[in-house]
Structure formats: C-alpha cells, structure tokens
Image (cartoon, rainbow, N blue to C red; front, side, top):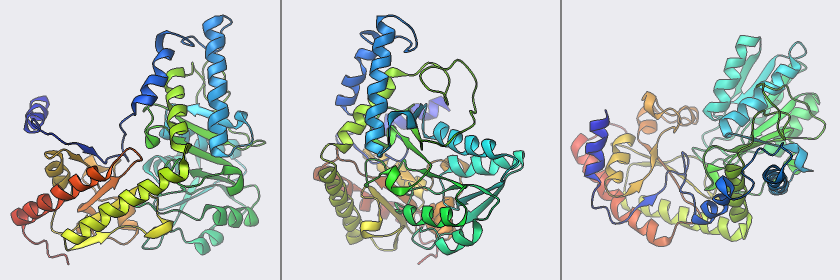
Length: 407
C-alpha cells in the first residue's frame, strides 16, 4: 500500500499550479492563523489553564478571550454558553448524546433529516442501544427539509430534533428558524440542535435569533486547524456529560484544553468575520464562475442542490455523467486540482452519497458527482486554471469508459 502511494505521488512531480477545492474535508491553514498559534506552543500560555502560576494564568486569560470571541461570532448571550471540543464530530456526539441521556425515561424520540452529516446520523441511530427511536424527515430535490412532515412527527415523546443549518454536500440553507418555531409550538420541552459547521463564516448565523438550544461548529471548515470545534448550549439548558475525567475550564468536556488550536480556531473566525459581506460576495462570485464555466464546456451534467441565495456561497456540487467521480478526482489531482467525490465521510466504502440519493439522484449520478468548495483565499486565476483542466480530464475519461446509458 505504501509503495502504491509513493508511485502515485511520483506521478504528481512537476505540477506548477495547485488549486485546493476539497474544503469539505480539510483546509489549507492561512499563515496568519499559523502565526497566531505558534507562541502558544512554547512561548506563552503553554500551561494547564487551571494551575496557579504565570503560564497557567496566561492560558486561562487566553482561553477566556477565545470563549468570548467565539460566543460573539455565534450570537450567543455569553461565553459560558460555549464549550470547545476536539472537533465537529465530538461536538455533535456531546450535543446529541448529552441531550438524550438527560431526558432518558422522559422522552425517547429523536428526529433528524435524512441528509444529516454522518456524525449526526450515526450518533442518532446509535442511541437505539439506549432505548431511543430515530425518525428521519425526508427532503425535496433541492435538499430542503419537509416542514409539514416535521410538524406531524413532533409529539410529547420527542426528546431532540437535529437539523443542520447548511448541507455540506449540496449547500442547501435550511429554514432553521421556521423549523424551531414548529418544534417548540408542538412541544416546548423538545431540544433543538443544529450542526452549523457549514453555515459558520459563510451565511449570517445568530443562534439566539434562530432560537436553537444547541449548535455545533468546526475550525477546519473555516480554514482553521483540524482538531478543534465548539458547541453552543443555550443558557438554562443542561446536558449529561459523555466523558469523565479532570475538569478544566469546561464542565462538559474534561481534560486539558488545547490552547494553541483554540487560538487558531479563534483567529480563523476573526478572518472569516472581518469584512464578512465582502468575503461572502467573493466566494459567491468564484463559485458561480466555476459552475458557469463547467456547464459552458461540458454536457450531460446535473447540478446538485438549490441555486441562488438559498445555497451556501462556497458550494459547487456537480454530477458528471459518463464519468466516475473517484476517477475524476485522480485525473484532476495529476493536474494539481484537488476536489472530492460523493460523500466525504463514506467515499472509501464505495457507496453513493446518502445525501445525493435522498434528493433523488440515481446511482450513476451520485457516483459521478464532484464536490468543490471555494474560499475567500481563492482567486479568479485559480478558477480559470480549474476550468482549463477539468473539461479535458472529463472528456478523456469519457473517451475511455464510453457511455453509461445515463442521459
């Protein structure tokens, strides 16, 4: 396996232009974020923030500043509503498991959409081991949750509803405020959680205005370091801890806080929210240039998800018929363009994306999908380069495999 990877990497030698568009799975960390983190490894605030000495007090002060800034960006009431975790997956586990364990014996139904991210979907299903029942709400062909069915589903036995703010694969911006109002009208005791990782830093997001009880966000989704995320928990709501250990500055997540990564996450957030409107406008312009360029050069395409203002400004998901998605990613990689295919979390299982299947794409359409996400760091030259190599790559693959019979 290692030798095969070495051979693949050798094929990439000589690349002169690289464009990284796989921002669904990880991101390139800007130098400003790296520079912000560096001192906290060995120069200052490198100690445990609970200890009573200078490095400990520095760490405590630094973390309190990070709590405050993230709470402000989310629109939280105060910094006590924020818990830092090692990432989005851990934050979603804490939100869902903690909510349900607190209500065990009182309510047992969990409601999610059928296109939730894997780290919500699998956790909700896993709660069946503890007596909970999960109901999935269908979506339409653009990925919007069916609010009428949601209204019918919520009852006195509903412990938690979890619906993501923006779908990471097809960019659908969900009507979260309307969903919250529906849920709370049917059962005020039902907790409402939203995975906001693909909304944070890309669309206006204010947890108090939305009325959600819990929300989760991720660092790497906004060009921050991997290994850190955060959960918002509305004041007055309790959760059951899902991990035990020494308690630091956070009641719900034990252990020593990773100050450098939290600082990096906070810096990445600052960069995203400084000139927020300009950043969003730039991403939308680059996304549209990319999508329009692909459709101008190729036929037999399907655009996955909604268009216009109801789509996240960074997201482009296109099914390319008569070409396999993984083959396209490899072909583009050899030219220095890096994208993903299908569902990022399930691609190694060789299964079609559960999101694309849920919005009505057939097997061949799902397997031929590529996901590209632009950032504020990309340029028009980057997009021009992608458009100069992508059609050639697709036509070469189509010439090899021929027609799949899908039109």
